Length: 201
Image 1 (cartoon, rainbow, N blue to C red):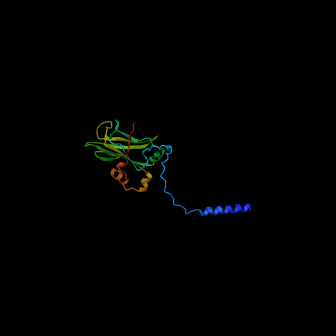
Image 2: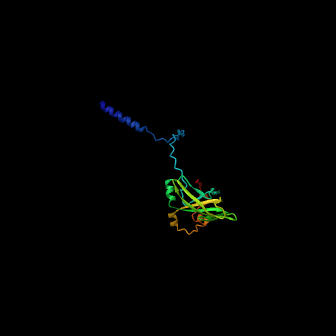
Image 3: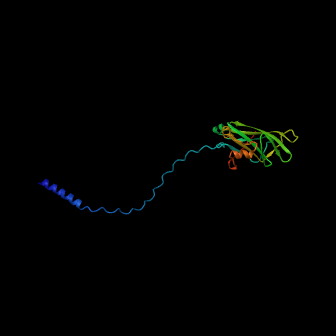
């Protein structure tokens, strides 16, 4: 009897509970945005990249600016601090050299005039020694009747460097004695000129 009574009391309680449940209310308004949390610690700096050696993009146009020959009448210039990859590129490159005098870029080897009466014949050699790419310009003959080569002042010396394989692949029809034509065909401009360094001998 007691079990039956308890059973009916439980059923009655459940019926009352569900019967009292009303319709679900609407969602309340969104609360205000909380304050931004503190910034986390900064990450570690990455490692510094290696400095370039000036041979990153070829063909390459290099300039000395206004300068003069050494007391022996020759001119020594180049590019130091080469990386192994830079050396590998330069070892397989064509090198063209031009001396500017009287507003004209004269191709080497060849004759360069200075003013109205003076002239010199120049040739050059280039190579790599340790991490130095050098261009040695030698004065072989001159107009003055003197034993030693005279000092010559240049308005500029320009060196054009181009990989041999690129030269063969592009099959360029260009007069390499004409500086302006060379830089135009190779797509070189004043913004891409690198700086040559004076080398002591």
